[in-house]
Image 1 (cartoon, one colour):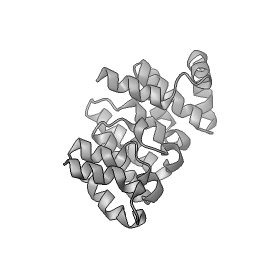
Image 2: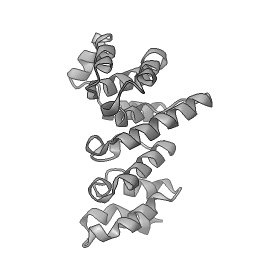
Image 3: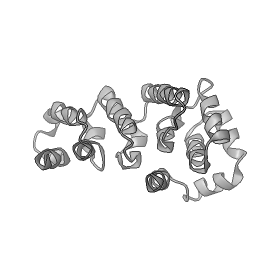
Amino acid sequence: MYELEALYAALPVMPFSKEMVGRAREGLRTNITSVFDAVALNNPYPSTYFDEDAWNQMVVKAIFMQRPLYKIQNSDQRANLALAGIIIDFAHERWAAGRDVMPELWRFVGPFISEENIQDIRKVVEGGDELEQKAALLACNMSDYPEAKALLKQYPKIEEKIKSGFITWEAIGQEAFERN
């Protein structure tokens, strides 16, 4: 297990890194948290070498495994519409089962807030706990969609904390994992 962790953590500095994508994807299939984390967290390899499908698979599994998403490098640059759709579907499934969703996942939806999903964001803002509300409003801050910006404006204290850098994805992620 330790050898696998070392291998996956070293992928970015290994010669022929590009040729190791298959091996890295193999590391994502595990249910051994420390091995998965070696690939997915604090590692620039996935954002550099994974195609969109591999990237999306990694993020969704990190959500499913309740891993700290703020430790996934270059998340904002690799967010994509397909991933946002998958995450919205995941949230609907969790809600239908009476379960919560981790607040950090809204990071991957923020740039893609639209008419189709603004009600999901509104649901979290209006019905979630304080941390979920901050996350949904931080996602609104990432959006160019006018209704998302209008929703954020309804919460000026939180908006100010976002603008001042007090509310960040890292802060949300840390707080979420402290309470678990």
